[in-house]
Amino acid sequence: MEYIANKEIIAKRIAGIFKTGEVVNLGIGLPTLVVKYIPRDVNIVLQSENGIMGLGPAPAKGSEDRDIIDAGGAPGSIKNGGCFFDSAVSFGIIRGGHVDYTVLGVLEVDQEGNLANFMVPGKMVPGMGGAMDLTTGTRVVIAATLHFQKSGVSRMKRRCTLPLTALREVNKVVTDLGVFEVLGDRFHLAECFSPYTPAWIQAHTDADIIVKNDCRMVTIDVQPNGKTQ
Amino acid sequence: MIVKPIISPKDAAGRIKEGESLMVGGFMGCGSPNTIIFALKEIGTKNLTLITNDTAIHDLNTGTITGVAHLIQIKLFKKIIASHIGSNQETQRQMLAGETEVELVPQGTLAEQVRAGGAGLGGFLTPTGVGTEVANGKQIILVAHRPFLLELPLKADVAIIKAKKADKAGNLVFNGTARNFNPLMATAAALVIAEVEEIVEIGEIDPNDVHTPSIFVDYLVKAEQPEL
Figure 1 (tube, rainbow over the protein chains, first blue to last red):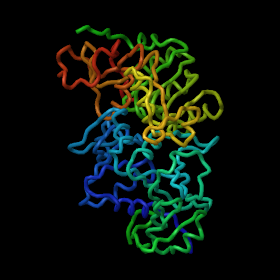
Figure 2 (tube, each protein chain N blue to C red; figure 1 turned 30 degrees about the vertical axis):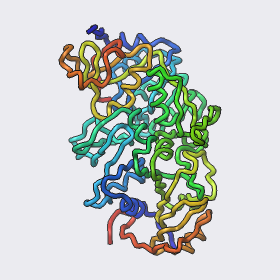
Figure 3 (cartoon, chains in turn blue, cyan; figure 1 turned 180 degrees about the vertical axis):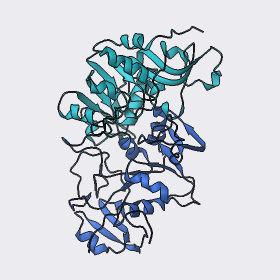
């Protein structure tokens, strides 16, 4: 079976997890794609660690406000009923457990729930930004990642080799192959995205994956370019 | 109320002395005191220690530079304490080449360190960083069987911050996400210089709307370069 990388599948599946009223922080990069797939009848509250509760959609060209950005530095907006606060309040909200979900990008994630996503020693040192606080304080941590690196090696590991962002904090991993829960130092495959099979995923991932008894085969209709068939 | 001196950008930048520690407000350049930054760039005071959330933007490919990145480019800092340098390739280059010492701190820890510095606390206990490199050399304290890191307060010789509006007493109002670290840094430095877009008479800001009380602010500078 040929693997075709597809970030859109990951974003669309994660968007289906949230319920109205839940507070969600989306990381920079792949997690930001989640927004466009949130169902219209689901009204979540987006928290942005630079000081927004109720982050709105990206403003149209020409109507940007230079004093309102998202945590990635891109022009942002605020929804009616939203509010701004300073960085100490923002991280009080995050560490204090007042954010329900955080969705973060991945360099490596392992079956113990360890996450590495902030540096490759000697090569890439962007810094952790808010990622360590988000993984530590948020109720549910979702790691969002293409299943494989460009080299073909899986990003899901038995044990992370890169410096950790957080110890044993990841609850769920969503890749373009399926949904994995982290429990008892193992990945548990809860959903397998067609056309892949649980056996194919197990054979191509360097980690212990238990296929749940109620593991569902799921078809997510979205192409790598974001279009549906 | 006591009226705070409104000084020129050059006068403000001249009050930052060689070897001092400097807090600079802003998040990815948003809410960054750019007028004072440019005046400091002109003067070129060296061997400073920078405390800031992130080192703004320096893209070596496109040449785009924002906020405090203008000062990193001319290497005014011997040490940089920040949570994120990912959008500044020059900071990363200086760090990897060993030209500038860079200490990376989780963003929530950095914010709380500055808050603790300004609030007279001896430090605080945070779960963030337990089991990671951030915990190296730090005391771990168990509270109800859960491990926390003891993090120490941060203070600085000078803070340069940016607000939307000030009255002449120095009461500050911030706008949108340009607030970020600015009100925290206003409390944590021996000398606090606020760059503001608008200066109004005392009494024109409703006391209910003040974000940073005037007593934290020593000098005001009228912003000339809000767009950089």
